[in-house]
Length: 206
Image (tube, rainbow, N blue to C red):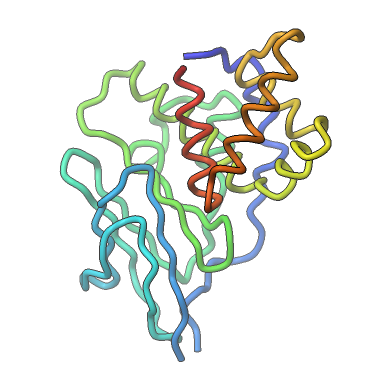
């Protein structure tokens, strides 16, 4: 695992504005992604499908979104409540791992209108494995929540969001140009923001 010496800097880009009141008013599209594929997504105990999921749901219908998969701790959240960034802020600011319910069971947040990301945590992890999982998911959140700004920085080859990634990946000065080329290629090959984030997370482990 590469160094996370500047992980506190990431909190600058993690403001999630507004409320996640996504079910209000005929039908609309609900998109749910997860850090693992084929996780089952339920709305009020009715199966919508498996991740990555895009489903049409009735507007004005409040409810609880549940996401689960064998081998992982399940997660659920009310869709008419604000999705906070506390989970990620705690990680970036050096908070105690495992100190909140979200940190113990995963987290869900909105990164585009009506598009959600659920991070499921494997069962029976060691403390170190849990920390590694949290760091990977923190990077995923950073990329998703700041995708437009990050892509803009990649286009010109410099900027604060690239600087964050340089620190996260512990890229040395002589490797900066090559790293930016690699991240540009990852974005070009990705069809969605979620796919781009997944590629970046995979890159972190190499």
